[in-house]
Length: 113
Length: 110
Image (cartoon, rainbow over the protein chains, first blue to last red):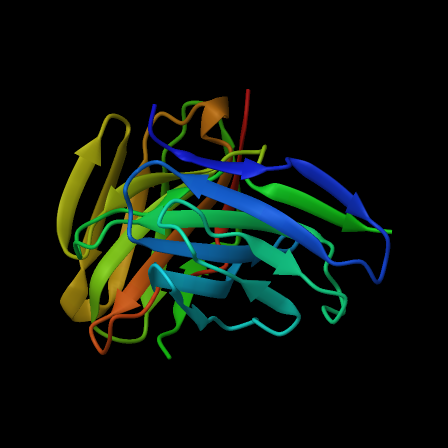
């Protein structure tokens, strides 16, 4: 079945360590997105990519980095520069048409100890 | 940038009741979507509705683009409808990602 996978589902890391969250899609979508969600809050955009080898900062990009070497993959690295990394991270993708709906992965819950 | 406001922030319903969720936005849009986030965090797209009315089972949505609001109707609510409902919009002004509202948290009790 087509869809978006994120791994791992839960991730625990010590303060000061970098960590990379995986996002893979087999929907043949061009655009991919990373969002952060804090308890009781909406979704805030971290980074997005509309085409391979290109990406743009979202509203809260500081302390994060991404790459887009393949159409199917858009990994997110949470660096030690991110002051409060504990959150729920959601990856999404959409096609090129303006009428395309956005699809989400199941999310990764990151806890920094 | 475009602002999105959803109301009410929280809603508690008895099973079988109907409800209306509202989304106001501050600029003209070429894309508006409604999503449901279940208690385990998964977001599912409900409607793509930049204008007009659509229905899918017990859910329907109406967007009045000229007045900059959208409504999501839930009829005969069930406990499985619980979760958070998000409205997200893309402004006409540019090819930009969707901007999400803060959501309406719905709890349906048996």
